[in-house]
Length: 248
Image (cartoon, rainbow, N blue to C red; front, side):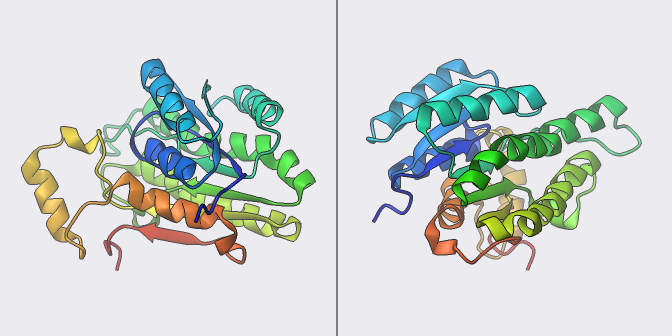
């Protein structure tokens, strides 16, 4: 059963990692996928081909969600190309970790801009279309760090906690128009980025998780499918921790 048949989703930051996993699972569930990437042109072209081969319509856009005008232009292009915008997944994000005493103003501002302001930009960009359609699902990617904080990540934690407050407010504002806004807070998800970590570090992280393993991009993608589909029609303003029990 294809849960997203006929729906069009915008996924930001999807050329690799969690975003790529979401795009692949969405296409497998019948969704048409418009995805953004910042610099990985080859990876984006590969993904576009792979998704189109599944019989859905898919297109990659080189676009910076942290830029207000680029977000507006992207939403307009996607609407023109695909005819509707049913789902928005704000997944684009960066880290610039450091202890507070060493973090620069520039590194603080950049993380807030890419991780948090992009969510405002993209939500504002799709809002009018979703209001006209009188339906839509907005899914914002936070982190367990945004829920509980983490030493050495004040900028990242602030951006991810901000996403939670923003999403809950959007849920209250747009609920009467059948537009839902929810948050996913992933824990330790194993991607290309974590592949660069030392094996003993990864092992100790896995052992600290009740389910005794790191998550996969597909674990996060499956929850996105649920929140994007009509199966979650009565769920809005919620934060789902996808963390193997980390925050239990």
